[in-house]
Amino acid sequence: MPFRDYKQKTSVVVVYTGDGKGKTTAGLGLMVRALGSGFRVAFIQFIKNWDVGEHEFIKTILPLYTNKLDFYKGGLGFFEAGELSTDDSREDHTRAVKKTFEFAYKSATSGEYQLVICDEINNAVHDGLLNIADLKRIITDKHANTSLCLTGRNFPAELIGSVDIATNMAKLKHHFDEKMLANKGIDY
Image (tube, rainbow, N blue to C red; front, side):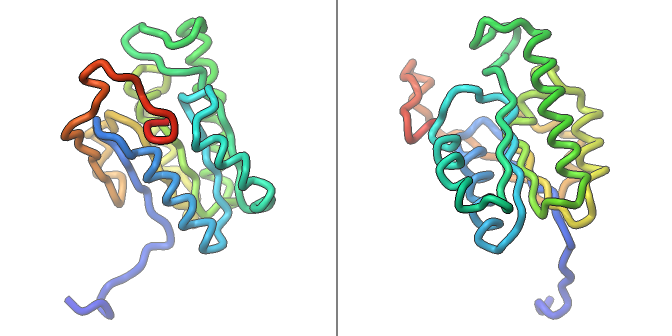
């Protein structure tokens, strides 16, 4: 079919999921592309609370994009099957994720942003810190002119039909499986 027969959506929902590396990095690439196109962007972090390379980069460029980029870091660290990466309780993690979701939901539904990136929101849902219903609600209720990017492992299969683009980052090999720690500047 010729391109002249194609239509363009006003906004899309993009998912980067899977057990492979690169989900946050893909979200950051989308942020760069959107800012370069003059979009207003909200980058919202659901899990990472320590200073990682992407947070330092965003802090550095914030003054250049004063009215175009908002950054919200709301996570308390990784939470998997009851194993906490911090001294915070499950209730503390849940409270932080819900507060972060409130910011994300307001951003996605306000019409003030052309792109809202919810980094590692899928992890928060999978770990039971946020309900699938909340994830579905932000997808359904987002403003018509706002694109939404959802990253993290384990995006719920039952919501795939609700999104426009879904990429599964499949791990072929990762040195973590050989009990090697993550490398600064590469893995975080």
